[in-house]
Image 1 (tube, rainbow, N blue to C red):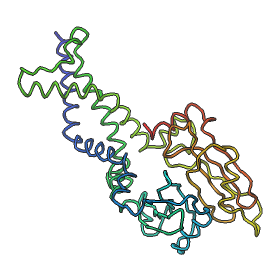
Image 2: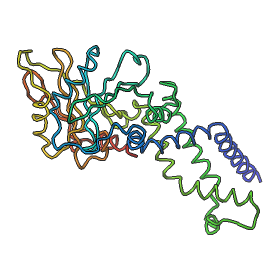
Image 3: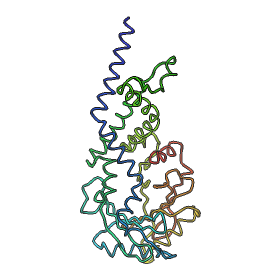
Image 4: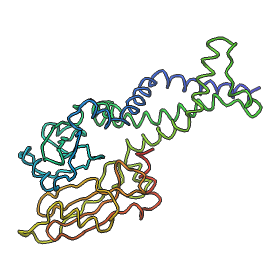
Length: 337
């Protein structure tokens, strides 16, 4: 009798936790899920909203990257520091030059300047700040609820809340081995409330694996220190570029150009696709060149990186995901999942 009462009390507690989680933050779960679903297609939607960012009939050969970065700096002469050139995904797309900390948005958590450049003419087509376009605003809503660092951390906590909601829901659904045969049925004749409850249980059960993956990976992205502890390596946070590498060569009057640095960096990965190039800053600055190998799971933000000294033109360091530890490989899966 006491065991039965304890079981009922436990079930009641789990039901209360499941119910109040849904009532208190269910709307935020839905908001993050909807904004995340739309953000998957943010590049396509951004092009649809800004048709000037697509070339209808691109020429065959783009300009050298040295010409592109010169055009960017000419359009923004007051912006000192590193620029990162991101290559387009197709011949019809624009090169995007990223400036991480513009003065206009300096105190925001993440609001870089995005400069779209025609790769065939060097024309600067647009200059926009992250968070001030429709799709980047939506992305911020998904990752930080438009609340900067507080929102970023809140989204991570909501991930834990979603995990708790999934686990409590599974516990409340579990019918025991004897009831499994009827656990997936929809009782059409038992009234609308019973049918709605059956649909809720069935949809929750079918979506449980995906929800658990999304919630746990969302938490790890919000709290990168936890991810680095799991991976056993630093610099594995999404968007991170690895360790800081400094030039040790003596500055001279013949620095290596951007295009030449890319050519040198291609040597260890001749079949890899160029994705990003970051320019050096200061006398000890260095080129950071990012490639995408076909085997990488994170195709949008690949980890293959080569650092090239601009004074000597020599490779300083290489990061190859094929040589990652198991923990580091696990970290590369978090964003795609």
